[in-house]
Image 1 (cartoon, one colour):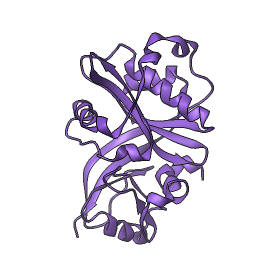
Image 2 (spheres, rainbow, N blue to C red):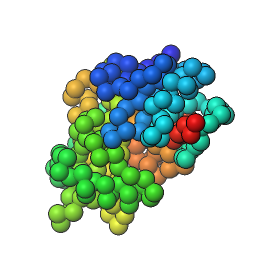
Image 3 (cartoon, rainbow, N blue to C red):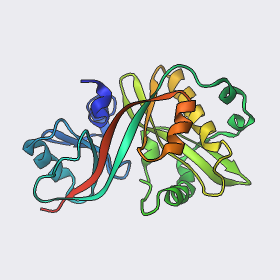
Image 4 (cartoon, rainbow, N blue to C red):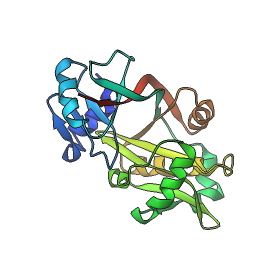
Length: 230
């Protein structure tokens, strides 16, 4: 099995094992950092273990199919995603465009503004307040306002995930997110890793942008945010 086939499990079992909350054949991150979790493989034992980790806080798991959940589990969100991996080099124009020079590192002091941007681009969802502890975030400001951002989340041998990419409504189409993602790819590449990310299957605009930046589609899967009510 390729480590990206179950990337969350791979990360929580290796380079981010120090963050893992574990029970039986299930693991999750601290929910204040990210609600991602994983099963070693779907089984009654694994779901029983995950139940002890998801009683108070929901958990998001990835799976190849949208199979039925065991009794007592509920789904609050279900989307189909595409996993894309960066191959080769960034396009030459991203190396020289003026916007790249405007990309800045974000800190935990920026979380309130990051939360506003996140809510504007993902209605009904809330940014995990300590997500920056999983990796650095980059952003762009215009007239002092945070208008684009993206950061790092999963880390496993040879791979680093780009996550939470977004541009404030009214500022799209100007290349801001492209500059942020390009900056993250360079940071990942300089550390000797390969960048990957996930994007909504129906988000054709974002997929086209990532394709132009050198990302290639690897696999499609289901993302479900679930909670055990038993």
